[in-house]
Image 1 (tube, one colour):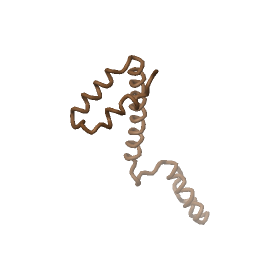
Image 2: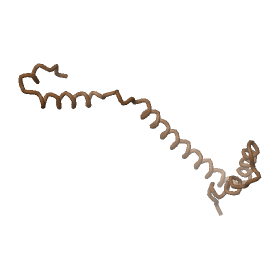
Image 3: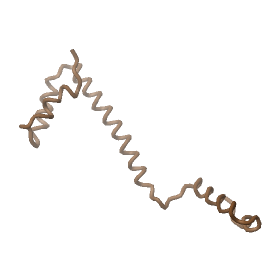
Image 4: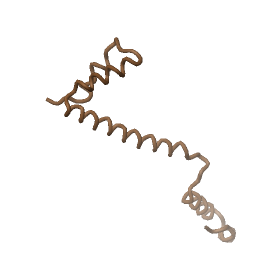
Length: 98
């Protein structure tokens, strides 16, 4: 019977006697106790979490790199059109077009 990765590591993660670096060794020991199919399932789960985490991290970096003062060209065009709509026709024609 195959067990999930969470079930395999549940006893390891929630024991109170583990502290510091001994936790890593215990987790490795628990992983080595798993049969090959459960190890394969755990590796897939770990890989999937790594990929999802990398995608989310790159999204956060992109969002953080955009400052509020940056305007895209579409936003600038929209602002120009909005400004032109409010101006009388003779003044709107004097604005530079993009």
